[in-house]
Amino acid sequence: MPSRRDAEALDRADPLAPLRERFALPEGVVYLDGNSLGPLPRVAAERVRRVVEEEWGRDLIRSWNLHGWIDLPARVGDKIARLVGAEPGEVVTADSTSLDLFKLAAAALELRPGRRTIVSERDNFPTDLYVLEGLARLLDRGHELRTVPRDEVLASLDDDVALVVLTQVDYRSGALWDLAVATRAIHDRGALVLWDLAHSAGALPVDLAGAGADLAVGCGYKFLNGGPGAPAFLYAARRHQEALRTPIQGWLGHAEPFAFEAAYRPAPGIDRFRAGTPPVLSLAALDAALDLFAEVETEALRAKSMALGTLFLERVEARCAGFGVEPACPRNAEARGSQVSLRHPEGYAIVQALAARRVIGDFRVPDILRFGLAPLYLRYVDVWDAVEHLAQVLERHEWERPELRTRSKVT
Ligand SMILES: *Cc1c(COP(=O)(O)O)cnc(C)c1O
Image 1 (cartoon, rainbow, N blue to C red):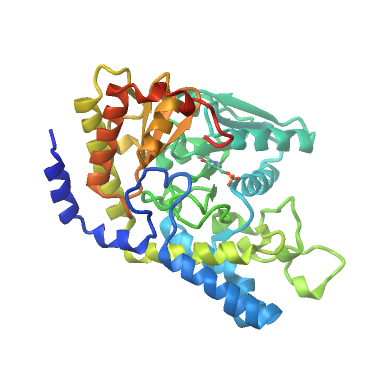
Image 2: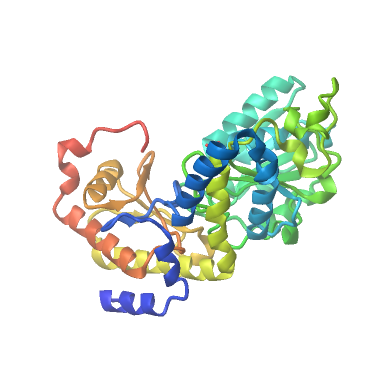
């Protein structure tokens, strides 16, 4: 069983260790929620300050050209492309993940006009299901969202399925889809696939092109560290782009926004999925944050994240047995995204008790304690210490303290 000294030795040997300094992490906090809101990269703070003071403050509206604000969604998209196995020009940043999912799903259904079924996982992140259901209702052409248990998704496909929407890493269990295998099975039934990469981008190698994926969306504020409400990204394989039509025909997705033509003409390529004016401050933060990834290979991130997860689960087994916590994630690191999840009926209060000890994770209904393992800044000792705190919370029944039991709006 690894000791704290072993964890320290792993940190000394960790090739990613120097990157921790690039984040403004509060002293004494073990941050295991970078899968939900990545911490602040120092370079992002500096970049936002510069954009506010020097670009917005001094150069005003001229900044759209002078500082390239107008092309920022595409430039940031190209940086993300490298992390998800896409080519430049296949990814653009815009809006939120929910909205991007809506736009791409609508466009996908038009490519399969004779088919009426959309398939997703029953336990998918709810926004995906809400959006798809709303889209089907809005189209009013008989589309139906069919949700099935994870292990039945591929076997459930038939010739009426137009689109399958899957989240590569399950937000609760961390279970990981094999992108290539699932994509192939979906294509074999003549359907298109839309991948939600919310918990994948920036955490593990994703090869959209290698898998032959059609469409994808993902978050800017999770493992990409773009800051609260950072714009999302969307991907469309180049072979589909000219045939895809967005349902939100905004002026910045027009071929020539400043021609102010009466009729809409889509921009060539992925840019047609831009709708309105981009959030420049947020985009600038995301743009700067992404530069940290330019220095690392996603394979190195993956290797460390798997090792962190394995250490976490080994320590839980060693220290927390007999207290009713059970792993709620795959034990095999290959089958897991960059998080570990545990299950306990008092999960919410335990997560609060950990936060009181400055170990930040989160809770997902009904009973999931979720710990994100972001390899850019987490140390092996952080994981070791986190589980030690968890063990003490359980041993001392700290979660029974009444003030820990009231639920806030955000859990
Ligand atoms: C976090 C998350 C989202 C978030 O959607 P927003 O519209 O950006 O709030 C979407 N899908 C999944 C799977 C997520 O985990």
